[in-house]
Length: 423
Image (cartoon, rainbow, N blue to C red; front, side, top):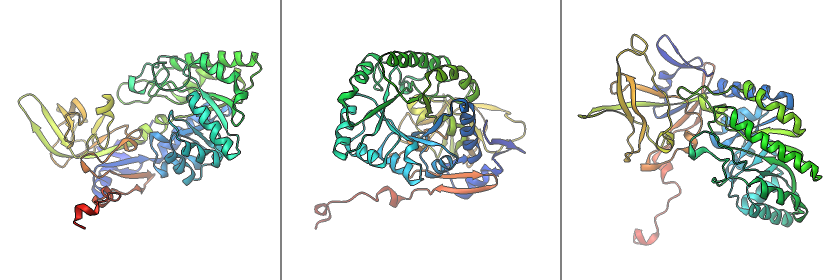
């Protein structure tokens, strides 16, 4: 569920009319519902209370400091994948013992900073990475915790670009190799291999792939126990799908019911890394119609938001519902088929293809729904476009949580060499 609903033919975010936000702050504009974010976090936390799981929000889904702070203050940990995300996590005062660090390409500098800060553990993706962490830790005289990321070779049933648990993906270590590494753990005296980690993909709407992966990892844990290897943590990753169109994803409770029996049997401390499930339906992208263009074969609704603001449709062919901020008469009378496209100079710049929409005109506002995850966090300055403003709605109050960029922001770090200036 989310807090974006029509009232008296106007789209509202909680108690605030979205059209008022568009006129006040301009577009493109990201709008987030605080209540939705926190509610989704609590649903997961409640569903996994029987194993006292630590819910570590996946920062990459949406890394705005206000969103991170809101979740951390409610007890969330954070799942990070870069030095920049570690900086953000510490900025919002997330306790280091609630930070887990993934990524297949951690640099020595990133490793050093995380070791110094005393994070909960690294999710290790390869033997060379383990060796690097061991080397850096020896230099620092520290012994950080490590969770080996297992690639269980499970088909997630999602888009190939967001599948991470097959052996053809770059993520994790196969079971056979992980087994050898763990049995040779005494070779790595400056790390404490105390956990396992799995993450099989994103936007997974059925419990089957999760159950298959957890069954595999449970059997692996049992085999390690037979060899005298005792572990402390099992990180089951994230990947829970949300509703973008006609999906019927599992609820937090249904997901938990399916996998809790397996998790309890492990006897390990459980960690989850949800991202999209928490913020996906908590945010929308508001855009304004610039032109309505009709060719002999197609109708185009040209808006002032493009692939630089929301790249998911261009990158994944992802579907986002597009709704008018104001309904005219009957809810969706006189639907017309059109492509919703942006101003970017790329043929791949679109938000929707062949979409049936109410008739719109120049100046109308549209909402691109379910844009809270991998929306702003994947945005760019392509075509030298300023990135959007972000606001958070809390009941009837509105807070700017990121100001709109200016042209000066675009060139802030650029320098023209003196020889080009004739000096």
